[in-house]
Image (cartoon, rainbow, N blue to C red; front, side):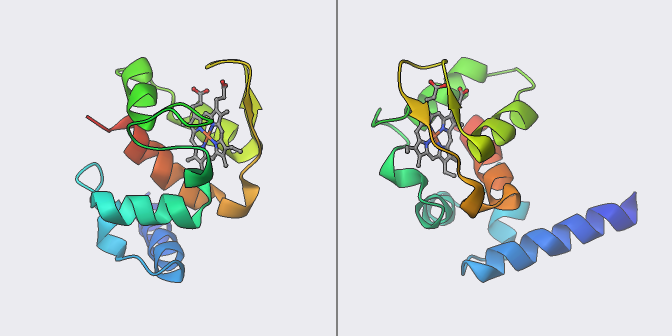
Length: 116
Ligand code: HEC
């Protein structure tokens, strides 16, 4: 158990290092550094369709946080962002984001869901 967590933490650190972010930022989530998360979102091409506060093509991420507050939806949303999909916020669909990678998507979804 401990070893698995260590391994995951190490993998996260490597992932973040690869995109030039301080590893501590995501590991300390939800107190994660907002700017670092925006940078990761930018590198992951999320910001072409999303903004934290404004609805763009996709819903404002604060609205996403509000909608799912108190619900255990992290896995479901990670999968949806990875594979793409629609039917929740309107008529538009999100294309798949496989290039961003599962680990980065998980970090981003965790941060999005914790937005105040
Ligand atoms: C091509 C445009 C586009 C890109 C790129 C995109 N999204 Fe989306 N996203 C959307 C749309 C459109 C929806 C609404 C889908 C729906 O109604 O089910 C959405 C919905 C979401 C949701 C809520 C899903 C739900 O079922 O409530 C999350 C979380 C999300 N996006 C995160 C991300 C993250 C993180 C990235 C980057 C890795 C990303 N999106 C990239 C267009 C995009």
